[in-house]
Image 1: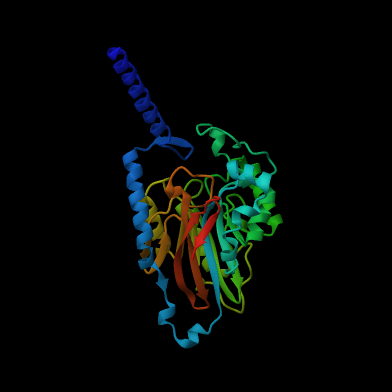
Image 2: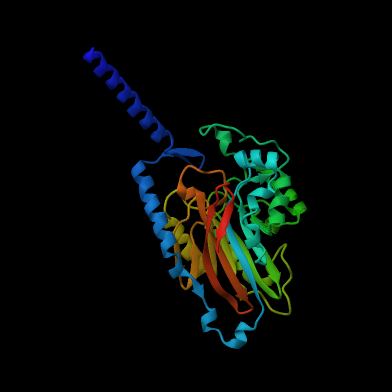
Length: 363
């Protein structure tokens, strides 16, 4: 009898250990450029430590030129801009949005958006009338990572207060060239500002102006673009005569002194910033960029000042159906305040999911 008890206990232990091993191994797979790579639990723990440390360090990287400004400078008009990370509204978010409406997802952040003149987000999908192919797919199904958003979702984005979307990312070709064309048509029809089009150069750079204060958005896409392409577009942003699809410059000024912001889709997912990305960021600043906003890794990465210019290597997720770790359930946002003299201040803000999985900005 005793022998049988020991045998049963041994079998139960074997099943339990084997099951836990399978569970952890399955949950340690992450998508990287449509491939899967296995991450060890040790690496995952390291990432937690890095991420927590980053949040603690953000305050020391705030750039604030207002302190050095004269009272006359402070009387100048200014505009406020907020930059967000990845917004993806397919898969589970689309499923719930079709049932309950998409406005719900932005209800926590909307009061914050209303404080800004422009809110800029990375739209991590195409926008078509096609049915979702990622709906209810398993983790290892290729279609699980092919995104398209119902055009109805764009109205929720706009009504929430997001005014500008960039699309230069690794999902823009998820439905081929036709998907890109439909995305352009649907976004323009919605009234949202749009930039980063990989096909139509008229919609690659974007110049935005309010109260006589302007700035320029230029894309970089590691996966479908090139450093040279972005450098050429930085030069275009410096030259009024080469602007396409942008608001005409006010007065008789050129835009040479208007801030240039690089909206970058780059890096490796779920890890810290690789050296190649840091090198590209420095090259862009050396060639005229004033601020760099990065995304794609789905987690908040390092922030840096280089040549007194601010670099946020990854803002992580803003709205995304990733809930498998604390790191993907929080993100960052960057506030920029500028006047006619240029960028006056930059501030990093935390983004977290509330109990209903709505993104909320911690001010």
